[in-house]
View 1 (cartoon, rainbow, N blue to C red):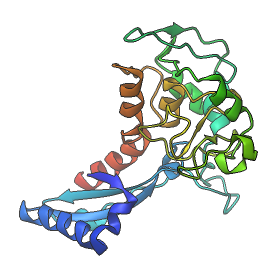
View 2: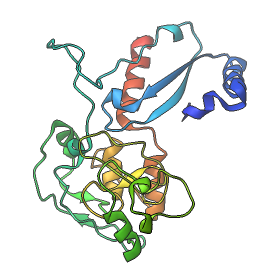
View 3: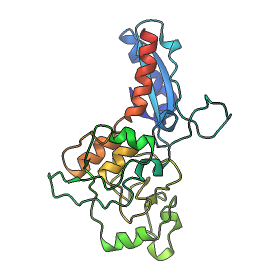
View 4: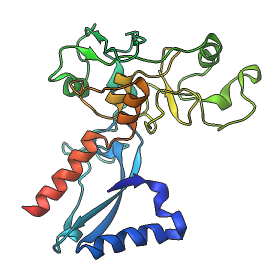
Length: 255
C-alpha cells in the first residue's frame, strides 16, 4: 500500500496504527517504509509511505536497496550514481514543441534527436515514436506570467503586476534543468497547481509524455482518455523504477 507522507501524522499517528491493525487482522505482519523516489533512479524528489505486509516472519529482513545518491560520499568504483536531473530526462526532446491534441485524438511525433543519456536510452528502448507529447493551451495572460518565472522559481518570484492576490504560494513553479523534478502529481498539467510543472525552457506546462518520463515511465507506455485523465494516470502512479526496487527487495526475501 502506498500513500503520501502526511498519512504518518494524520490523527496523531492513529491512522497508521489502524492500518497496521488491519494488516494484523487478516494475518499479515506490516512494515512501514518512507522512500524517496530519487534514491531509486527516478528523477524526482517524490517522497511516499509504503506499507509492506507478509504472513511469515520475513518482513524485518526486507531492505530496499538504493541505486542512486544525492551527493558523492566516496570516490570508489562501487559508488552509487548521483540523482538524475531534469536535463538527463528531457535533453533529447527539450526543443520539441508538443501538440495540442483534439479531444480523444492521439498524436504521434518522430524523435528529432538521438538519446543523450543512459536514462533516455532506457526510456526509448522499445519505442521508435514519441507518443502523447501533448500539452494544454494557455491564454496569453498565463503565457506572459510564465515567461517571467525563471528555472527553479515560482509565483513568489514574479513581479508584483503578475502576482495573484490569493492561492498557494508555490504555484507557477518552473523545473530546473540541473535539479531533479519536484513531485509529479495528478495535477501536473496545470501550471497554477501547487508544484513545479512549467517546462524548464518553454513557456508552457510539461506535456503528458514529459510528465511520464519524469515518473520513469518508458516511452512505450501509452496513456488514454482526456488529457486530464492522462496526467492523473501518471501523477497518481507509483513510479515504475521505484516499484521495481520494492519488488526486487520482496523477491529476494521470498527466495
